[in-house]
Image (cartoon, rainbow, N blue to C red; front, side):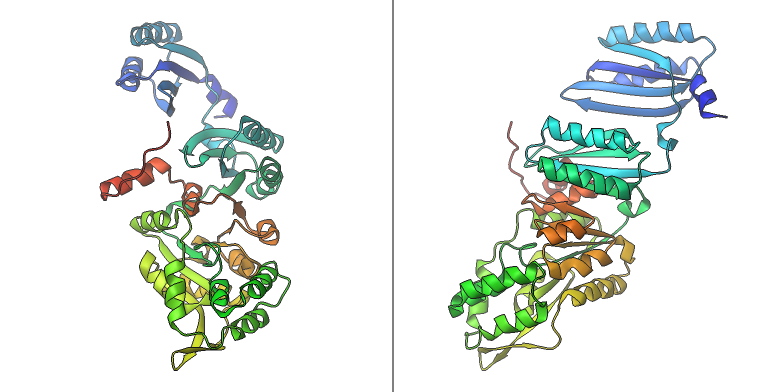
Length: 406
C-alpha cells in the first residue's frame, strides 16, 4: 500500500482540553464500537492541558464516528478535530536523531532558531519531551529526515550564537543498553586542578597554573609539562595529599549522575593526567569502577618531584578507555567519554559519544557534543533520562531532593 493510500484509509483524531482521569479510555471505548484499528497513539499533558492524538483505520461510516466522538468529548468538556490521516510518522524517514537542547534560560528565540535549522535540513520534529525544568531547561526533540552528522554541525552554530547546548545523537539501540562512562578528573569530575592545589603548598601556584592552562589548550607537550610541574613539588610532605583531597570540590551533579546510572547498570571509570593518590580515593568515594592516573613518587614520606612509571597522557587516556571497555565487556561504541582539555581529545574520539564539558575551544570543536552548564548530571538528559525519573529514584532510596522553584 502506498503512503498516499495509507493516508486515505486513516483518520487522525485530536482531542484537547483540561486533563482529567479517564479521557483516553473514554475516547477509545467510543472508537471500539466502530471496529477500527489503532495505527498510532500519542498523548501529552502540559500545565494541566491534555492533547491526545489517535490515528485509526477509517470506518465505513465516518459521519457516525464523528457524531459519536463529538458527543463523547462534549460530556468531557473537551474538543475534537477529525481529519484524514498522514500515515505512520514513525516510518517516514530512515534518518532519525535525538536532539537535546539545554539552556539556562532557554529562550523562545533559541528554540525558534533550532526548529528553523532542522526544517532547513529537511528534518521534521516528530515529538518533543521536556527532560528537566530546573536548574536548567532541557528538551528532547525526536527528529526524522535529516542526517545526524549534518544536523550536528549546523546546530552547533546556532548553539554558540544563542549560548545554549545542543546535542545530536543517532536514534539507535545503543541508547537503551548498559554503557561505560569514562571521565577526566580535573575541571571535569572535580572543580580545579589537583596539581595546582599541590603547587600552592610548594609556593609555585601561579607558575604551575600558567603551564597547566597552556597544556590544556594543546600548546605544550603534556608529558614534558607534567614532569616539569611535578619537579616543583619535590620536598612536599605526603600529608599534603590528604589536605588537598579534603579540599576537593566535586562538580555539582556528579554524585547524582553516578548514583543514578549505577542503578541502571552503567559502569564508570576515571582517567586522569593527575595522580593516583587522589583519583583512587575519589573513585572509592563515588563508587567508580575503574581508575587510572599517574603516580607520584614518595620516599621517606616526601614527594621526590618524579612520577613512577609511564605517564598517562593524551594517547594513554584513549588506551585506558579501550582497555576498560574490554575488561568490563562493554562495546567501544557503547562508551561515553567526558573531558575538557586537549589531552582528552583522543579519548573523546575513541568513545562512541565524546562530550566536551565546560571545555577549551579546541575540545568543543572536536567533540561530538558540548555541555557548558555547571551541572554534570545534565549528561543524563542526553541519555533520555528525565529529572523527574532521577528524583523519583532518589526518593525511593530515601534521598530527599530540594523542592524546585515555583
